[in-house]
Image (tube, rainbow, N blue to C red):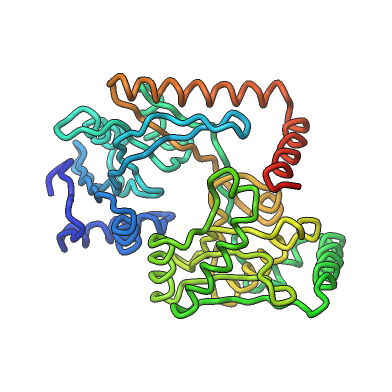
Length: 378
């Protein structure tokens, strides 16, 4: 393929696929999202158009951009109030989907060509870039670009055993964990069990339990954070199970699923992709204790890392060992519709940041707890 040529068919030519796998193998932190089998399976399940852009800069260095073309309605929040843009024909660059060592200017020029060239789209979404990326520096100089506030991405470097990890915490912390765990287990008269499901014939059970738990969380009322019993989730779980990488962890109390963590082992890393717990057990921290079971199993599996994914949370700061800052980036075209979308995006993001500064972190945290309780129906 030449620079900027697109693969519009689901079947990628073998030479392109080979270059794709080679670029991915050379990445410092390859991601499951950019892995060919997972990407193409996801694209088929979503009914999206795969777009593979091959790049070559003036120094002869090569690379690729892995993306999907699909309709997207960007949603921003002012507090918990959603603000949505018009539906946009969007090129979604998957997380970790910019491969190779080409110059940042070559990457941004190829993306802008998708907005301005033949068969142009309305909008490009880069699903998280490190804030110190040279590509981010190039994009900051462009018009029509909305860069979201940075969020940390936490990972944990695993040691030889789970016991060795726990020894790194204070005696008081370990004592508190044991005390919390005893209180949690005493809640269930008929006992509780910690279950890990990994097989393809267990996927229906995994999806049923995860969906039922997730539908009762405050995320359900926000329209996000849910595991769905749809073709996409079935595809992802079957793909992971077939590679023996699926790890679906559940806490079951009195025969009822209470909490879950879903993830998969890839690239020497346990990627945690979804979680939830029944809100009535919140004070017993079931999610935290199930997370520790996930970390223990990752040690047994010989993984070197646990990747917590996007966003900040107290448990990530406690159990994470390294982090970096990332931001989602949206590049808008020059039509009336896209200029409206860009204005809504920038305006809602700016207002939300101002309100958070005015309210202060402690007040914002109290409001968040009250709002979450309201969404749960407490």
